[in-house]
Length: 363
Image (cartoon, rainbow, N blue to C red; front, side, top):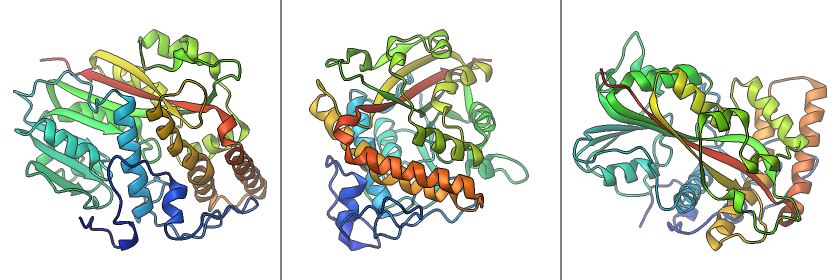
């Protein structure tokens, strides 16, 4: 089936196949790392494309990235026990939902399939690629959600208190005003409706060499107190390398929040949501003993993150800073990432993904 991509060399993509960024780049040109380079294209021979908007989003927006997002969504679904959405929604009464930052439409399609009687909106800054037939209850809108909801010209389709369910996932690399975004989502949802976010805490952890069965990494529920205090036993695996500290610094320079996954539970409480639930999942950036086959496949995406995505993102984020000392810091971070990639199988790295949902109180 033709996927609607401009570059036909990637049309052989198949769901359920795990692609990392290196694999996809190698379909066009052999992947070549240049350890001393800091330009976004020097780490490989492929010219990447980015969003044309003024948003802070620093990841590519091209066929290669579309495939990576699809593979990531497949892996997350498996890692989450086959579940995409966690809020306790009644299919009999849900009539209007939204997927904010819908990307390739993977979850918008899943939402429309799960709630066939509902009107489903998928909102993103860029057009959604034609990876699958669009279900009749889906409407894609290419716009910033703030433009659609805020003065001076709010869109009637996105009126306050008109949605049963407001959802977004993995906006960590593009959203700067999280408080405003959450307030907007709470305003959009009906009393009794649900808001649900899934996002990362971009702090690297490492499974110790002497831990051969890391059962603490199994999916687990957390209370708000446990989140705030970082008192879960698996939090002892914190081991943030210098290259990630540099990455966090540049994200903050762009107004992005690398810790947003961890902050979300308290933000939900502060926004007045109730019945808040928090579930945490391991996002592997390496491999270790005792991993399931599905986790090993997921870790292949982590290999692409370490070897290509983060070096490119660091270089992209550093552009325009114009400070020689920070350019040197970024160059050193990229070199460290290339070294990490070469020893990837011994890296044993992971980060946390937080699933957070809460209900708007009934009036």
